[in-house]
Length: 446
Ligand SMILES: [Zn+2]
Image (cartoon, rainbow, N blue to C red; front, side, top):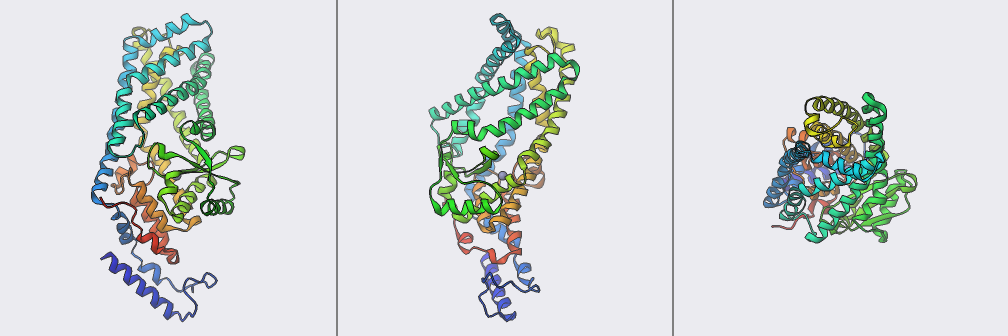
């Protein structure tokens, strides 16, 4: 059926060439097609083309990917509930108050007390929630074939992550509690601002100072890949002179890339999975997408949009902490909002807020991702390569969800949405078709 459709398309293409009386080859770029030639675009069946791509994944693998992704919906709930339970236990049995008391005994300096409390807090919480983390991050990922690490190597990454959290958390907590103490009731306005600035700071330093703790970054040498990427970057006004490769295969087979930082920290990176598993058109369309994030200032736009959520979240935080402490403050031995022992309560309020905001944060992200897809299609002009990469991402993201499901749970567009956009683009640019990409099997038949 689909093959017949493609054959029909070819016939009509040929007809169009003959009818318009052109003598040159149809692919000659110096020869623009006549304006009255929309017939080709209308014949291309976008929906059928999308279904052909979706059918590239064997049914068994599709079922596994769906099960993996849908399991993630439940993990959102379990993560939220387990956080609330652990935080409640810390308050109810006054463990939080005890950690504060210990910090106060060790030093009289308040900023240092905050740091000492924070270290105890993050270590205790990591230990108590470890069974869930290990299931979620190790056993579940292994079960679905999405993790390449041994347990030891995975644990090493967890420990590094813990140390990074201790340091970054302390950098945020000390001034945050300082603000609460100094500003009284209106602390949450400045608290939200500080948190947004902190988020911007972390986003800025992460690619250069945090990412290399987990993966090795090296300059990409192969000119067959590097040159087209740098050409694409120049064309899009991105001042990069190097492309970096990182060994993501250490952790998984997932393909990814990014353009991060600005000025001195600007870098284009792509992972070894993308290099190993993808063709040049697929790499180009992926880099076009990442360049779109950069050129369209998605980092800043995301920060502003999520910043609005953070401000509202802090208002909710302030209100909920004050009203809870009136009722249970004495029972929990939490002296007030200026007391570091209040942290578990703050975590409960923030987790509840962001749990309920999941569809909003996902929609902010998904909208920007869709924009980057459009940018990538326009700049790389590889709709078939794009569709193949979208299929590869379908290894861990459900390919064909319902619209409501996509709205709530998807932080990137689904495979069907992305491939539909690519095929729609291709319908308007029939000359962009790549027969090799269309025919390329991207999954082993299992
Ligand atoms: Zn993206």
